[in-house]
Image 1 (cartoon, rainbow, N blue to C red):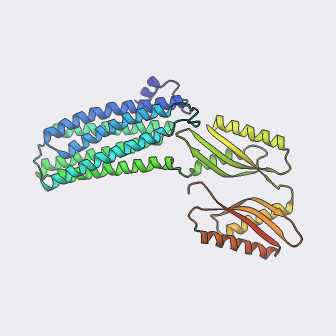
Image 2 (image 1 turned 120 degrees about the vertical axis):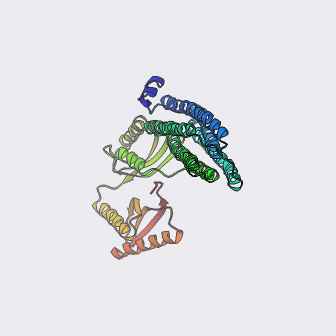
Image 3 (image 1 turned 30 degrees about the horizontal axis):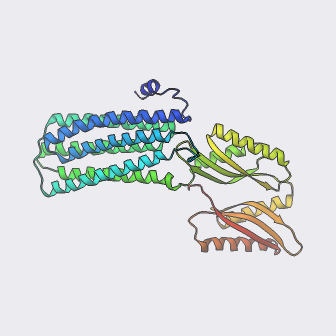
Length: 391
């Protein structure tokens, strides 16, 4: 069914890196979600009204909120697909995250409202009307939500969409909550004991938890999340694959929406390289990154010593000493300025974000003392910085 819908409603569906194709995927997922959730809301609301069941009604309005979420997602995806302009040179992709955040708050509000109703039902229980047909229809709704979740998961994987993966998680939560509702009805039909309010409260809590999780996941790219290690490795390996690049560091990626990222990286080149040829190489890597990685990449050249055996050996020795002191730290941009009475070792020290100032100073002092044991003339000039990759 997923392939059928994609092939019939998305033109050039295989080109998922194109903005217009990605937007079409989002529109398709939104429309399918609106249709499915409106259908489920109508069915469940009628059943809940007929049975006087707060848990079924809560589940129905959860589906209505999902339909409203699909509408907001539809608007958000369409607006996020707008091209860049003078006021927004990096495009409008983050609107998709804002839309997802609005949806998250709607889910939280629905969950909170029905939690209050469920607590009232626990204090003053109302009689239920058990009907086998209601259970059958609710089981059918579980099947619909299960398919909808898998549908979003498949589309989300194709275009690497966090929003669609969140919809998948929310749909699986709906499957669980509707299953709990069915359980309360069946339990009442068998035992005559009304646990509707308790189950309704459970449904409400699950809905609120899903809303909280969705809000948290959406806020991360808006605030500025750390670089995914796999993405970091991919970009670094891409740049380092070009002859003439000896290494890379200081990768920073700014996300401006799905498939809209700007990055900067420092690329190490031999200090005796022809400056014009090195610049031509850097330009070619930047162009290739835009085509192959869909990444607006800015590269800063760092000249390094590759022929002076003393400098190369000492750089490796400093790195080894650093790993012995703390394997979570590393060095780069190593330079040596020789003098008769003093030899300056100038380099950058990369430490994890969680390290306190006291720990940073201890590492610097320990490393400097360790190197002076090799040669008392060594004087370390260290610049401390952080790695922007998630751990």
